[in-house]
Structures are given as structure tokens and as C-alpha cells.
Length: 252
Image (cartoon, rainbow, N blue to C red; front, side):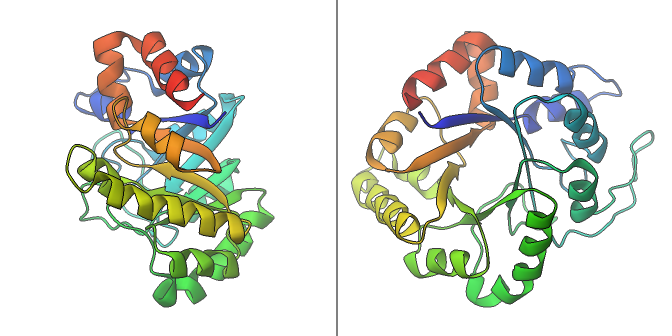
């Protein structure tokens, strides 16, 4: 069965809309785990618009499932301009302090609303290699956020990655249109290339209850998906426990 990791960024975003600790990120992590989720994902950005560094530290103390921290490894420390919010210490400092089971590296920047493309390893591979080596020395499995481009996936193995996470935004965008099967085939090919390179395969971004089952059916070797935005909406609609059950059913 493909593992389900729940991204808690949107829970933190709701909390941050007021000067409060409610809703609790820790409580929702525990609820998701009790309902059957296999892991918890967070993506702390330097502006701390949703998940904050302190959330990462708190989660690392209590989680008994896989903890996956996503982010740009080159994100530097940043002063917080929000009262009561600690400064962002830099992505690598968060990882050194928390030692997550998995670290998913993403080439985002402070101006992006959300992650929207994978790494170009012809440009960034040499810079990433020593970072990946350090993360592995800390005990983290390293996954690189990648587009479904075979030549780029082959480079992921060369720089030392253990897995790739396919950026599935293009599949989600094409799902209801005439190009769905054409776009999906790109991910099928990408999964086969990853398997040839002995890379584990994760996927994430805009996967939901409507498009996930077909992706799981067609894309082989899929070890894990991380879902946050759609899951949060579905939890409001269905209730958290039923939403988890619905996602697990599509991954079975």
C-alpha cells in the first residue's frame, strides 16, 4: 500500500490568521495518525506564513510516525516581523535540530505562493550534492522534488538522492481535460525511470479524492503521497476521520 503523509500547512495557516494557538498543529497531527495516516509532512517557509520553525521542533518531540520536512535547503535565516513569532533559523538548522525521517528538498523561493516546479539538476546538482550528503549523515532519507523529466530523474540518483517526489500539479490541471492521458503517461514513464535508477518514488501537489485513484493505478512503484490542501478541504466536508479513510481507500 502507498503511504499517506498528511501535510499540516493549512492547519497552521488557519491558526496564524489569529493571535492564538488554536487550531493546534500537534493535536491535528495526532488526530491524523490515530485515523490511520502513515506520516506527517510540513513545509516551513522563511516567512513562516503557515508552519513555523517552532512547530517543527514540537512535532519532532511527539511524532511516532514518519516525519517529513519539506523546503529549500538554501533558505537562509530570516528575522520575524510578527510579534510572538520566533525568527526563522534557516532550513538546514531546522533539520539539524529535528532529525526528521525524511527531508524533501524543494526549489521554492520566498515569492512563490506554493511549490510549482521541480529541480533543474543540470544547474543545481553540484550545489545540492554536499547538502544531500549532510542530510543523509543526519539520518534523513532525502527526496528531491522533481518534474517528470527522465534525464533530470537520472541526475537525481547521481547527486545522491534516495527518492524523488514527482510534482503532480500538471496532472491535476489536466485531469478533467482532453490531455489527461497524455500528461499522465509522462508520470508513468517517470516512475519507470526512477525504478531503473533505484530511486524510491513519492508524489504530491494537488492530488485529491477525484484524481488520486487513477494516478495510483497507473503510476507504479509509488511509495508515498503527501496531501494537505485538498485533505483540509475534505476534512471540513467529510470530517477528519472519514477523509483519512477515503484517501487510504484510494491508495489501497
